[in-house]
Image: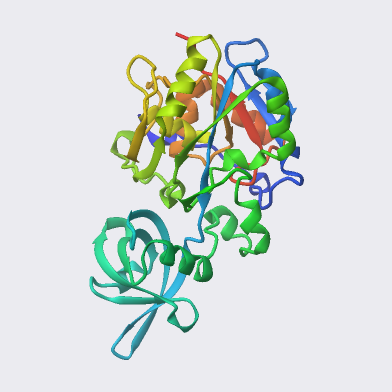
Length: 355
């Protein structure tokens, strides 16, 4: 399958640089190919009207860390400026990072980050595509604290290229239920939730469950191959507890539905589901790539933002709701002025079939 089948033109004015205020004032496009008039324009809290008491909603509770670092490499009398975006932690003191200026680095080099060189890393293994292993001089909670001091919120390129990060992003680019440090990109479908919406879920008897997938910077990388089968996904780490898996299986057994908040929750649940549709406890790293032709087994509906053209996430929503349906939905969203990407509007998708 060719990548250009998932391309579309998006006007610059459709790209959101700030979230709606309040968060739950964003718009919602409901997409259900199985119903007449499959596209419906709403506001975000209206998604609750499409759920039934006893349904369950699944959130990704990862928390974004300040994973964007600016530093310098000193070799003899030569200094080179380095930009690093951490994307996968492999040990208490080791991160894999995408490096701006990776060609300036050699294995064994020291890189200094922050004022007064507060944080130092040794360059380890280098991989193609600017990915570099960084071995820091601090570890565990000490490293976390240092990153909080010297790091910046890693805004997506389509925002960062249009305005600088500011203090608002420390709050705006974090879900209200974030609690597990480790993500370098927000699970942005959850940014629309407020305490008011959570109270409305409770009032209707909708269950809430949490899983953790630490979203990596690879989610922003373009697909550079011509056919999707040649694309290599980057690993992201996460876990589904046995208690959560059992609770979600019970939801299905009694005839209710599971709704995933975001593609990150969905990818994790798909990593934890067996061929019969049963969820199990799961922990580890996943590079699952969901494309058209693969049936999603773990969820019955998906809340998600509007994604980049030619991206793995647009391919995922096409796999879930049908390629023709999603092309029509995106054409409608663009024409109707919906706001795209991380700080943009939301959509509620139902699967292409219930086979």
